[in-house]
Image (cartoon, rainbow, N blue to C red; front, side, top):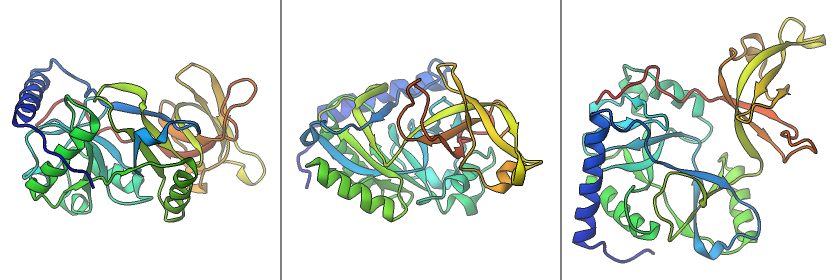
Length: 294
């Protein structure tokens, strides 16, 4: 069990820092929340330095004390009752409906006019408090903030110390068997900083990445008259085709060129392209329109 107390001075400093950020966002001076991004776990990492939590297949959301921001700085329009008891300081987490419900969740949170019946099934699962200090200290404060808020819509993401690679793989197998996506590792003494690093690691049975649809390749045989594969482009500019992982409905109405998708793969080919790439989902988790609208 995590113990310890955050000093009054630390809490004052944190509040002042993020009050300034919230003011800057409202003034249009800050557009992107400075969120940490995950790298991929590789065996050999010093696991005694990390804590484990479940990887939630939700929508990453940054509560700035007034509104939910996407990674691109757009606003998720939550009902006022949903956030009425949230702390007035930033929180980092995911909006989540449950395992294997990403498409339903995405459809709900992207609406500019939120529907109460959809948001009643959503919870904001928080895993960090942006600000100074090491993660283990921030997590102690996060525990206290969730408890004090008494909001039924605010949930603390449980963390436990990592031990060994074999134990980590056993946890991964258990979570995947239950319908989960994987695990996350967070370095316990890491600072809150934007960008990708080994402070945050994702642990999955496969690797995943994003690409942009470039073109539809016509199907043959049983797929005659439907989409047979997608030609996609990676952030590097390299292109390749994805031909598996689609339902017949998606093949009939495939993602349009310019759409961002997520695919899974198993390592790289000799030429550096994803091996055995398979479609996972359309990554349509940005709000329908942009701009800060508290």
